[in-house]
Amino acid sequence: MSALIDYTQPDINGKFGKYGGKFVPETLITPLKELEETYFQLINDKSFNEELDRLNKEYSGRPTPLTFADGLTKYYNKAKIYLKREDLCHTGAHKINNALGQILLAKKLGKKRIIAETGAGQHGVATATVCAKFGLKCFVYMGEVDIERQSLNVFRMKLLGAEVIPVSSGSRTLKDATNEAIRDWVTNISDTHYIIGSVVGPHPYPMLVRNFQSIIGLEAKEQIQKAEGRFPDYIVACVGGGSNAIGIFYPFINSGVKLIGVEAAGLGITTNKHCATLTLGREGIFQGMKTYLLQNDEGQVSEVHSISAGLDYPGVGPEHSFLKDEIIADFYSVTDDEAIKATELLSRKEGIIPALESAHAIAYLEYLMPKTSNDEIVIVNVSGRGDKDLNTIKNSLGY
Image 1 (cartoon, rainbow, N blue to C red):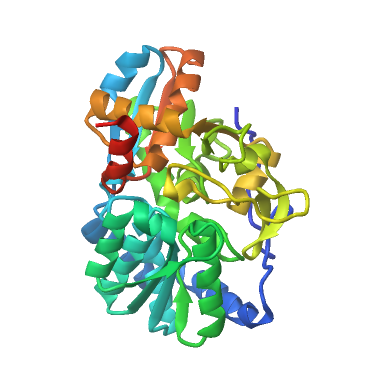
Image 2: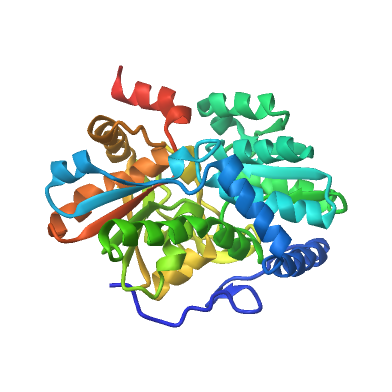
């Protein structure tokens, strides 16, 4: 079971235990401090919270349902399975929760220009969406590999008025897009706000993104109490950077619920083609934070692989590193092939086509469900829908 502790992370220095912090150029220290101070002013501001609540309800479509997965439950014939339906958010994933919160922060800071990084494209789409809504310029950095495999989301961003900037360096995926976004931010700090898409980067980003995403877990708490009269026994979510996972985990920390994060094992953890950071990584400094990181013997960041563009990242949010070390959450990994099989399974048993990221969480049920009993309850966070991945899924299944 999850450890029963008093949980007050991060500390005043933005550290989750020994992880997190602020490892950035001097030019970013002042804007990060300004962002933190503005955030703390606004989280207790009635008008800010009322506007965010209104946008979540009227624009994003919250609360998202907690769906009893009757077909999946019958298939495994073990614990009851519920699905938290972030795939039903406006733009098709949980990313809009954070984007709405941060665009309101950017407006308060007086920023006119917004930048973002994206892998699977969902954060880019969410950022482009809120920029269109509030009339701000939007620039999205995206690796060339991801542009090719997420062409539909690239078109959506452009249709929304964003400029998508291809990144050709390194592995041409999410980490490289993030590097370029940080370079842009350093250069244009006076008028630019960087909407980081996950619980990564320098403090206060891991904290504020977690808090904006915690609406997922807060809703799930209320919904499962209404449906079953108690908390679940297990919560399962995929982990790349980790925002959807921490969003559903955070309100359940210190509740006795077993929290399970599922990483991308890619072609297998015995190969060098995976993203199993918490399984095989070690401590390192990366993109402004101290966290678990996949790296070689010389400390250079490893090239990674996942069929899922949103999990194709060599690091992880520092809070997840802390949760792992403190055994507050457990982390496992599943392969590309297992994720594809899970996509087909959920599609046929529930009529829900998940994003390939979410399919990793569904795939872990093959390992979890045999260990459960009929009187237990499992919630799986379906972080996004699979429209963006249909070409990849189609090619993988040979249709």
